[in-house]
Image (tube, rainbow, N blue to C red):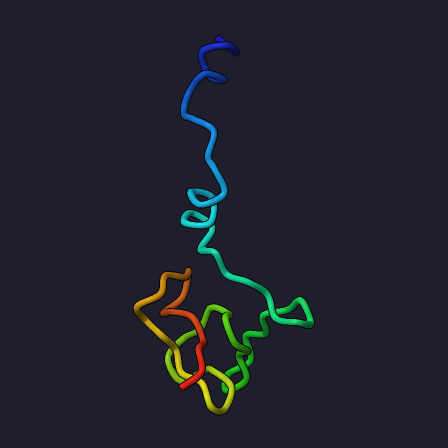
Length: 71
């Protein structure tokens, strides 16, 4: 039974892994703060939660509405 379970699926390359994980990069500090109005660049966001000068790009996939990007 163990062999049949281990043979399920396939090994994923880095591109496939990023698609599943979302491909989000952390900021220079290594954190994606979820503080409303202060979410840094390239972090998952909810609309209107990005830091000043950025917006939540909902065309990019994340576990929230989108990813914070510069205007």
